Image: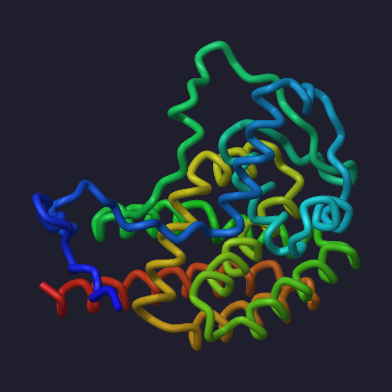
Length: 252
């Protein structure tokens, strides 16, 4: 009976696996995969400028994902200038400007603490009045959408990724409700930075205060309390800013 084969054949050495140029496989977010497909459809010309995109539900069915994932991708496309949302009409593909490069399509991966505080300062400058104007202009459909987003926040309060994305959606929807293109464009310009900041804030501070303020804001919007919305939103941003300063200082 033949003997067992040697672990290493004569004349050969065992390869040093650790020394090989092997890189860890990165986890891919489902939203990133869908966004890449959408981006490629635009860049390839299959999604032509002016194309009216199907509803979130229809796109979710086409891509085999949830409406939340589709909404995340649409927000990113709008923020990067690939698409635009027209109140009462839907989302349309935009014409790429000559100076728009592929590098501009890469989202912000993370924010430093200083950048995060800068984002909060920007939000304080515009979101108080945004909330006030939204309370004046919100109709029944707007309120229903805000309530749906708030439900998503409540259902995903233990999931930082989903909760922070719903948080972003709530604030973005307030800008949409204002029906003022300048306010919406200002918000969209730093959309990815806002998302990153909100994710960092939720990860460091938790969800309790976010849920409290968003519930209270929706109540005031339903009551058409425009001044109350402005005051509450300003307080929301101030409290978040103070909390983040404390957390950052404690970690230094």
